[in-house]
Image 1 (tube, rainbow, N blue to C red):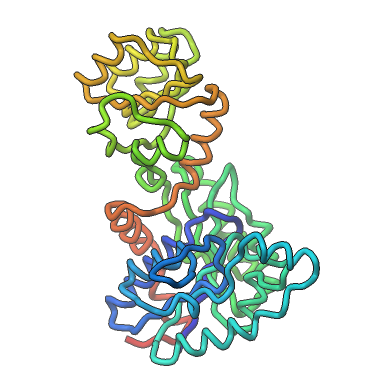
Image 2 (image 1 turned 120 degrees about the horizontal axis):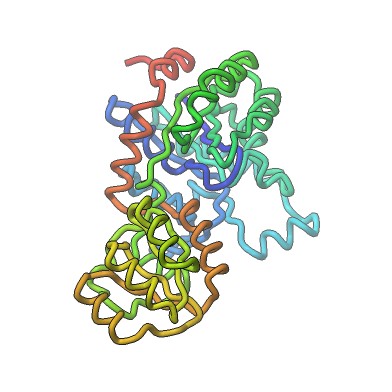
Length: 355
């Protein structure tokens, strides 16, 4: 039985997407696949049992119905943290090991997902490195591009994990970075015995969010064209500039939400005529009747929020980089994207898989 741990250099790097992609691929190849997320950070009750929200979701996608108490034996809530910070955290690695053995009993491959980064949970001895060593798992580390790659972190993990580290997946790579990546960083990683298992290109759809979800996340309400709230937003523009300058920026952007004060009807009208995905009006200022009517005619939702423009822009930036995968279209697209670049031939050779 092969155990593969999916970790990352930082949170929100794509662990769920890779876990689902690999799980579905191995199932298609005829392997019996199991799943575990030892440390759950999103406790949720389902059918009278406590588990981790992400773990429930991944299991559903993979068609698994394992006991949530086995899948996520450690659930990190406020009480857990208080005990840990007081030095009252018991050694839970033996429990994780016991559950892993139970879950893997009739499986060919176990996929084990981490939480946060590989060193998240160090305060209570439940970091990814400790879990990998306890369960003796092969490890794939995802490094998501955020202004740059965490190549230092990857080399530290290689030193810590040794032969247990299969390699790295470089995620969300923008086109302009490819030359530097191929000419310098991938060769550098190879010189440190870190195999690049796949390079996942940046894809706008993977960071997109529905207007309805966006309204909920921003604490706002849809005040116009609610029947179009299933539109997808991929990025945003701040409409605080002069109309002429705004028009130039807006023409270069697709599937954008426009964040603008409720009193800027000039920018609001230009944005709607330019077919923005939605307007986000800040400061809890209602638009005039002309804007509301035009919104309904064009089918462009308007979200009203209390916060100021700067605050909403910061929230949007975080949302678009961290939005959870939940839509069927995004899952199908994401698994196809990941599996098209992942080096399964190398994984088979490195782990001894047959078939």
